Amino acid sequence: MKSPLEELIESLRCLPGIGPKSAQRMAYHLLQHDHAGASRLAAALNRSIEKLRHCGKCNSFTEEEICGLCRSSSRDHSVLCVVEMPQDLLMMEQAQCYSGLYFVLMGRISPLDGIGPREIHLDRFLKRARDGVVKEVILATNFTVEGEATAHYIGELLKESDIRISRIARGVPVGGELEHVDSGTLAQAVFERRQV
Image (tube, rainbow, N blue to C red; front, top):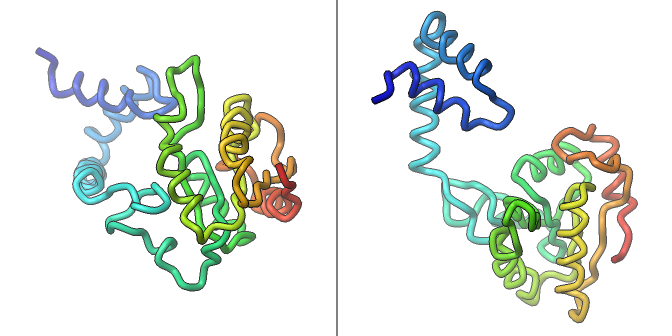
């Protein structure tokens, strides 16, 4: 049976980019210097797990059935931007270059990792895209091999529809991920998107 300290260190390792040494440093910091922070972290994690769910329309995280962005009457409901992760949606919003709606895949097609169309909710995306309201789909997946494959796959799925399909421009560096791109570059990429 593991000690509480070993369990804490192992639990912290589930975070991306956190190896054994980093997890150990974090655990000791919380225990030695920040009991209040550790309690806040534990409470916030518990509340998030209990209250957050996927939005019924965009698939991002929300406390309600449909998130505030999807309910907003000030957004353009005829344009749907497809992003890989919620942090990509946040970057798009921070760039203030887009006023339509979103669909968050929660990943990208990656056969080597066992991630196919089903795992990234493409069935839900297609239902949303074909709802009769959407006139354009903007593919804003990352410019990685997997992101490009995902964008191509979605483009092929929608090819026969009356929906305009566009891809954000390559103002975003090849191999770059949206969450790490500056707002100006991202805004330029959206403005210069091209039809697929």
